[in-house]
Amino acid sequence: MLREVAGKLATLVLRLESLTTALPRSGEEDSMLELLIPSDVPTEVRTTIECVLHDDLRPAIRALTQASEVTEEELRRDFQGARRSW
Image 1 (cartoon, rainbow, N blue to C red):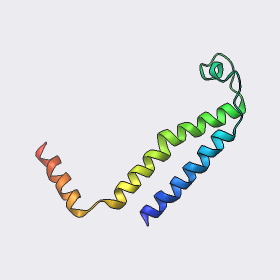
Image 2: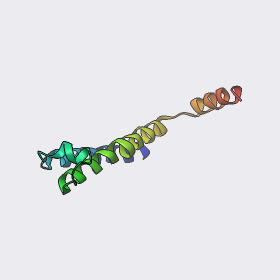
Image 3: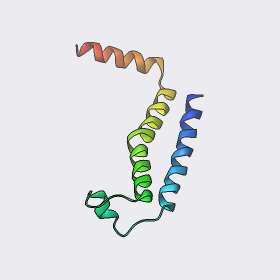
Image 4: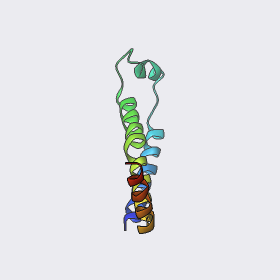
């Protein structure tokens, strides 16, 4: 079930990526990103989506996928290794 949720998030990532490519790019985007001039709506939406993908969704997919594959043996081994370092 967890892997299925990660898969649905991966599908959402693809939809958001296609949305960012569909948004028009301003000729002044570099100046907007350098905060020299105010951002326009397409640039703001695109950069917000890109940040959410990079900072939140892709790491969440990796973590959920990893959690869906973890075994009791791995958890015990990691726990024992962590205790040795205390």
